Amino acid sequence: MILARGAIGAMMATLQKEDNGTIQAAQLYWDAAAENYEEVFSGTIIGRTRRKAMWRELQRLFGKGNRVLEINCGTGLDAVFLAQQGVELVACDLSPQMIEKARRHAASAEVGDRVEFFALATENLGDLDDRGLFDGGFSNFSGLNCVDDLAAVQVQLAKRLKPGAPLLLCMIGRFALWEIVWFLLHKKPELAFRRLREKASGIDKSPALKIHRPSVKEICSQFAPGFRLRRWRGIGIMVPPSYMEHWARRFPRAIGVLAALDQTIEGLPLFRNLADCVVLEFERVGDL
Image 1 (tube, helix red, strand yellow):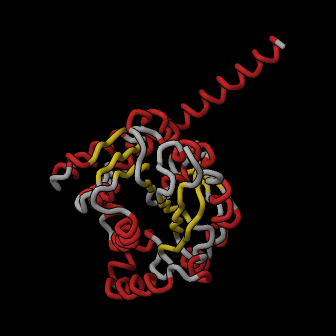
Image 2: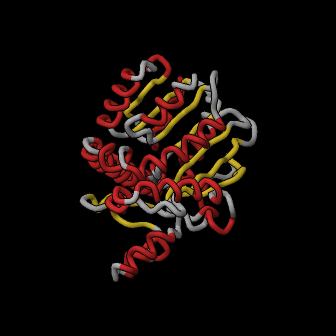
Image 3: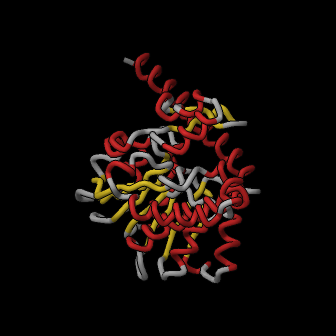
């Protein structure tokens, strides 16, 4: 019995060390990415269409007087947007460099008193135990696709959201029509179908980090029993992925037309399955 306990203890210590190593590697990666994150995504034509689509959902769910938890907040643009609507937030990201930029954005927008920023990995949400319960939560632009254990995140979030509170998650889709067409035209079939073929893959320049691509059904399963899916929709159905920004700059009006079309079809069952990203609206269920 003593030997068994010792073996279990050693295994848990090894797993903890591996988890800490993964978090540390992710922090280094996103610290480096923070330097030009807005230039390569948030400030691009395609990036702005993605964010506007998400902002419509956030504005529908959260308003003045709500207290909201954001995980994977990046440079804080979503937190600042909501704070300008009168929402109070606790916003977290594992990258101190991202958090530093987020604080500057909030100060510049004069909403720093409505947002508390924390350099905190999603896996360590237990450190927020003294912040009480929130009226809702969200994670934008695939931050949760970089987390190994969504079920563990579900447990942490369920402890921090009030019963009935909404949880909005934006994650990578499993079948991106634009991506398939683009890479087939460029004679790269191995990339065209990578989302369907690989449920997890390494990140360029940091292969130790993994991007996971669970299906909507798998996400719902991992967020049970604490959360129930209310509805879901797609982002980036007709608007192409961000690596086609050079094309978007040549035809900005076309992107505007495609973005308007996206807004019309984003909730339709057939089309939402073809999106670059999926947005899932959950509800916190059960008693605390």
